Image 1: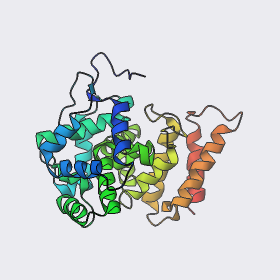
Image 2: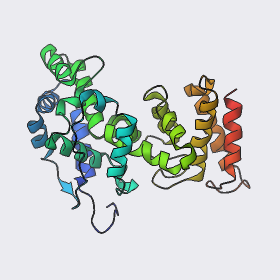
Image 3: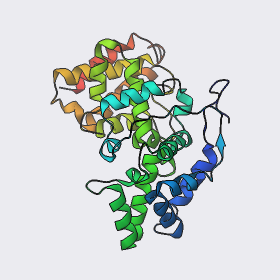
Image 4: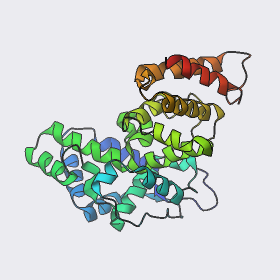
Length: 295
């Protein structure tokens, strides 16, 4: 199904061929295709040529970020940079920003422009990307090669064939920046900074847990499509942000507690006679559930 993103659609790798490429690259650990991909990631021009083999759809180019991004910053984009990137790409429709092929194209364009080095995609803790690739290829160990390939693909545009659709929102650096700031935008300006801080509590883990609880592996959300503003989702983020601001050491930061919050809210929404899923009056219910679970 073609995406409707306006009269001038954004350019992106066609989703089906792009995902087939991802799936092919993770089918066999340490095979020739994986080694060739890592060799391409080791050299930016080779990676751009490698990705250029894929068909591209759309006409309108996404405006690129022009300042170089260091490997350290790319691995964990600073909050001010995430906000700037979102503002640069604010006109991108959420339906398009949900596509792995779109972000794979955007990341490849930034490699071509020299904004990021292709080896940034393979960086780990503590190895720089170039060292991680060189070590994997030198050791010629299938598991190490496969691990390096998957890391690069996740950073490139997410890896849905292995990690479900949520991988787009969690693993791709540029997509994660866009979606975090979009959800901050749904909040009122009064607490936007609190919500922004919430998404960065304990590094990536709280954001990843939120996404994994909010949507299933196919990208369907408990609280409605992520590409549509939702009162319940906004109320949840605001309630969590206010709760953590008042109690930074709250046990609610644990994944199990967050899971209980989502389950209770979903149960309430599904109960007949309690109103539609996006009823603003549910904000008080959300607040009460968060407070109860955070004790």
